[in-house]
Length: 93
Image (cartoon, rainbow, N blue to C red):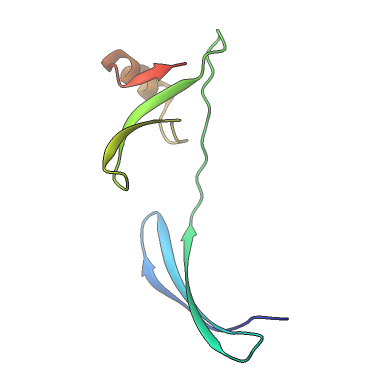
């Protein structure tokens, strides 16, 4: 059972991710198109202070259209997390 990629095309190129559309031949002989998000990669850090407390940062998430608590992503510096804590938009648990 194999899926053969007949065509692969980047249909959107963005700063953070690309959208690729592949045309596949199915094992049955049929054709199918699938869309694939190609993300350049990201990491999540879990900031733990000297007391063993885990830090969260409060930020807007457009997909849910609300402010959520989450782990800081790799891009914020420790200074930024500390500034956010002073403003009340960061919390430790």
